[in-house]
Image 1 (cartoon, rainbow, N blue to C red):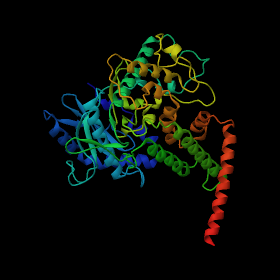
Image 2 (image 1 turned 90 degrees about the horizontal axis):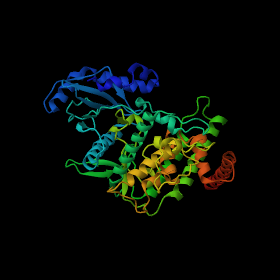
Image 3 (image 1 turned 180 degrees about the vertical axis):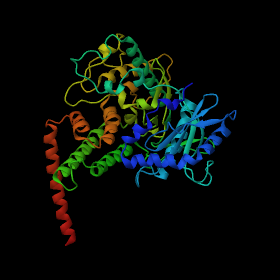
Image 4 (image 1 turned 180 degrees about the horizontal axis):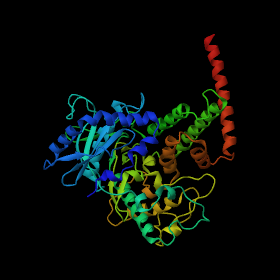
Length: 477
């Protein structure tokens, strides 16, 4: 059986497209570990049930934002994965404290999922959350997590471009699958399994919002968020208020465009547009928080459930879900969209085509409207159909929020669109004016076009700044 890492991206090509500072983080950790491959192999062998020898496949490593990843291949062709924490990106991201929270969060999350669901996930073999003399690999080793490996392929490798489907297409274009019933069946199975995973996670609830931590007895509780250590939060409003504040700070701190010089008029205009979009998100989100659900309990979300973290077989059936270090409990509005790929890009300039006509000839569940959505992509309605089907299965034990909303209704709601889908793009695109900004403006239903609304906002901001200046002069005198 071929090593799992044979299918990982080419190391050289992947390093070449990274900015030098990020590539340096990867190669630094690779060089740091190179003299100790034998020790890592001996440690893994000592933990194997039959103590089989293994080989660290040093040439086929990969990485994410926080971890360098290697495969350990045993003599019986089974594999384990070992992830090593990399050095900080800056003073705020990937710090030792953040890495520790992420590792403990993933360990606790996988414990919960294995204990309380049928979702296929890796098993933790061993971990050490921070460099210390107690590290079983040695005091100089970085933090690590050792876990079993899962085999599978991505949905893209099955010939389904989920990203392309999520982007929508013009209604004048043909059915993307034509007469290819095989690919249509693969997609339906994939979306059905994501819906099933979404329903299973909804049953894991806690009374606070935050990330997971686990004690020596295996008891899981809620602590601060793994990323930045904020929280835990008692209410949905508290969580969304902090999120809105984070967007406002991001709008100010986001990097300048390549052609913009700090202090230039173009740079100032770009920052103002980001700040305007951040204000739109707060304005759109806060009225959508359902007070009936605002005090919890709150469901568990994966947090990074995109297609690269989902393994499938050749039929589209999900056989593994990876990378749970971003998991946590969230408000129901933030839980509503399990992955942006099943909600789809919002096109502010044209209506998206309903996917019902090219997805299934079965009648729709009565809980889902058959009217084509004017704001969703072609994959959105297809997923909503599968979600409604999973929720309506005979004997299904569902956990609904206090408001009584179904998961399909939440996924299809403005609250879910703003609180989960657009929230993702606020971070990813740094409060982008043309993408998230126009989507938010349209949802808010302003009579002015967005550029007019922006100019009004700038005028009001100038007036407030001028008033603040007057008060400062008075205080100085």
